[in-house]
Amino acid sequence: MENSNDQQQKAVAVESTNTKNNTNSNTKENTTEKPKGKTVPQKKKPPVSGNGWTNDTKKAFEINEKIQKDRLNPHNKLNLKTNANVKITPLGGLGEIGGNMMVIETDKSAIIIDVGMSFPDDSMHGVDILIPDFTYLRQIRSKLAGVCITHAHEDHIGAMPYFFKEIQIPIYGSPLPLEMIGAKFDEHKMKHHRSYFRAVQKRKPIRIGDFEVEWMHITHSIIDCSSLAITCEAGTIIHTGDFKIDHTPIDNYPTDFHRFAHYGEKGVLALLSDSTNSHGTGFTKTERSVGPTFDRIFSEASKNRIIMSTFSSNLHRVAQAIDRGIAQGRKVCVIGRSMEKNIDVAINMGYLKYKKADFIDAHEVNKYPDSQVLIVTTGSQGEPMSALFRMSIHEHRHIKIKPGDQIVLSAKAIPGNEGSVSEIINQLLKAGAKVAYQNYPDIHVSGHASMEEQKLILRLVKPKFFLPIHGEYNHVLKHSETGIACGVLERNIHILSDGEQVEINPKYMKKVKSVKTGKVYIDNQRNRKIANDVVLDRQTMANEGFVMIVAQVSISERKVAAPARVTSYGLVDVKSEKYFAKEIEDMLDQHLSHVKEGILENTKALEDDLRKTVRKHCIRKYRKYPMIVPTIIAQ
Image (tube, rainbow, N blue to C red; front, side):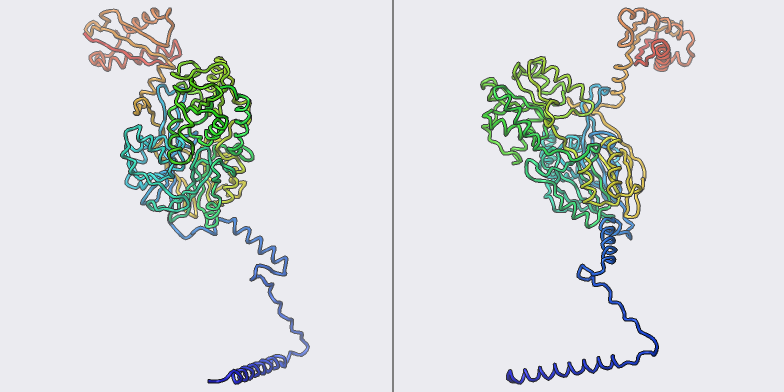
């Protein structure tokens, strides 16, 4: 074994040899003959940039400009070589507020995003709610892999029981929306369908058919909301659901920006984003801004009974009121079926943390002094059957509005409900109550994103294609303008309408076809559908009037055998009723004398012919199109 001195001597010898060789090599290079009379220019060394810097500032500018363009260019992150495509079909929620429902599909499978309801207008007599038409879903039944729920608002889950009566597929969502759907299933005697629930974990993508779907937390006016990242072979689609960007939410769970940015860096094929509040400038205020307003109202009404009404789903708003009531030593009474159900679910699930001793029943309210009572109830939209409305007209079983009561309407009137809200305020004031509504600027804040929040999502996601959703035409159009301002090419933006199917590939977006869509009328008293023609008949009777004719006719003599009975409603006044009946009788005699032989022998054909004749008369004389029901008894 060699000692250390021998090893050191060998190392020195090797180093000496290497040094000598390098010296010889350099000498040879330096002694190379240069061409006479010519100066060989020295080669410029390139700027050093491998370590993230360079001493050439001009070059640095060019490099950085390219970096900026590349990070904003969605084309670079998508697979432009794929022929795969994905189809998007909204069945509700476009051109309207509510009724949200969308289908996203490949050639082999499809998922549904939300199954919501909407409310009828004044012309839909006897209709309680509207649900989307499921015709297209029946056609692609074999492809349906599941329903993905974004949050628990009625305009996103309200039609689930009616959908599940026809089609049963797995329902994916976070715990609160599923439990709210479960409560609806219980009401419809469909408790066994809870077996289809699939409670997801946020931030963990799961496989549903051809899709990989991730639920990403986002803030809104209800607890436990999500946006969806839907990935298939064609690329990733981000569906925001309803949202606002609240940095200080009541539960301290802000929007999960990191997941949006994660997908934005990977490359997003298309963004579908909430447009409801797209005309709002700046940022929507945080839910916490309502708290100081409640503090002021509760302080001013410390000796009075306080009755707070808001949307039953806005549990954070309800929680703020309850917290302040308990802090003042008040007992909380919850009134209204939907409010009771939602609070019970939230407490049982652990979203809200209150003791049972904090609450009292409605029949116990009068046992406590006014200063120790807080009533939380429904009716902020002036619904005629709501608890607050019945209290205001003294028809509620336990609670009646009295002088000194402090009413807090912590909600904004939904478009179309302004008249109802105004009416209930008038009733409350007539009963002697004080009403806090529009005189407090922060008594309500929106749950939907304003322009700056929409811009933030657009910049985080950086989609190639942008489809604004949720809202009337003017809302989605305004949102599209915001998209253009945030760098989305105008040709890559499309304004959808219900039933319009678009196909998207990383290289293109195009309209494919239109599918059958519309609304189905529901009577909540019986939980059944109302046929379209029934609603049309009701509209006709309400707007145009009703005429009923019963006549005995001698076929052989072509005349009325006995005086006809003519009854009309909503067409002429009582004084003119006899004159109108005489008009119809004379018309019937004349009609019988001129009617064709074939029609005269067919009672149904004769009734149809008489209906047309009477209608023409009413249009010509009264400018109305009444419903006419003739009954001919032939002899």
